[in-house]
Length: 304
Image 1 (cartoon, helix red, strand yellow):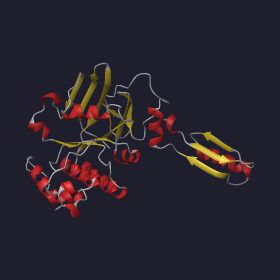
Image 2 (cartoon, rainbow, N blue to C red):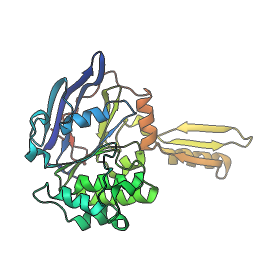
Image 3 (spheres, rainbow, N blue to C red):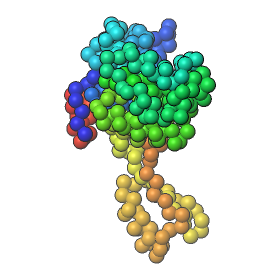
Image 4 (cartoon, rainbow, N blue to C red):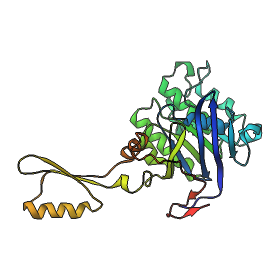
């Protein structure tokens, strides 16, 4: 997949509160049409970074450009090009879902059709229900609907599926895939690693305010972190493990030795969650954060 020029550029971003460095020298870029996932534990600096990009929080230092504008100086025209789903819902109103979406649609020059958004967000059965009467998960769907009603060029999704049941999460994934197909650029934070794997093109991992890794979803952590593990039980019941880049050869060797398939044979390929946990626990923590000012075109080449 080939992406266009970056619409988000962040260089040496820093945000401090007294002696606490909430964001400490973070650099990355997001290309037009790309879904970029920002991963990290609670308190790592993800939400602070997003709020700076959205123009809601000032930075201590560094350079930031969003759709060609410094968020410090973004006006109403610039904000109309953004869609935002914040970490917590602010919708407690005494109006119906349809009324709220219709109201917000009036703020944008080219909004989506309200009924189409209601259907896309899975809110058809609640369209005439007052928002104050909705469950937490349903209000979260309203947040998502409000985030996309303005047909944004860049969509910020800060843990958007919190409170969703599994079916709702999959519906949301289909919605995001549709937006991506239309060319929407998306910045997503999530604690669901399967969600990141399903939706993301690239990911950055933040821990302790620093960007500790960045790359294509299937390359995060490097090749060593993704070496498969072969596990089996021998004739006396002892469990053996061997980490190898050629699991098929190991299995063939075991079969030749035992004359049949070993007991409890498993070939375990590390998931994104395994790799992520290794990174944030410091197992593979680089001594210095990368300086990721480039964007992958999805073929292994790098666009600078």
